[in-house]
Image (cartoon, rainbow, N blue to C red):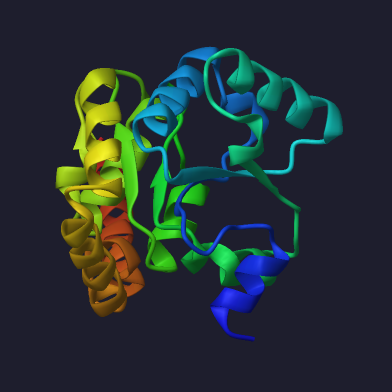
Length: 206
């Protein structure tokens, strides 16, 4: 089916900029959610596509959004699907916006594999730095923000004045998927084998 028909079936408006985050519910902190709401307030022609966290949680999130000046209907739940079908719908999103401080790991890899740029904020712990490492390996290090303010401002810009740059990032992902470091499995294998060999030599040397 054409993406437009699929978009209609999933409840995504044709004329809206689609932010998405398919991270698990336990990663969606109040701090993350409030940053997202600020983005939605300043990008009025946008929606936020989230995993369907269940009726009760979805209702609470929509209610919190409405209390903070964002129509709860702009939060659109994505029903959980088998992974093949889940990946297939990713290209309907324009930009993946990460959670803070526990960022995207596999979900970021999925988005990048399907050609959807990811915006993240790096932190000081492992869980908040994985997504940044993935972006560097995919050649998109400029989508790594250092502060919450920069994260919000960059998301708003990419949905508006910097839309052309966002499209460039999408093309970069599509064209480089088979050659970028992130998805170069043979290179990863060689480096991992090299580490094992080094460990073996160190062990033999005492």
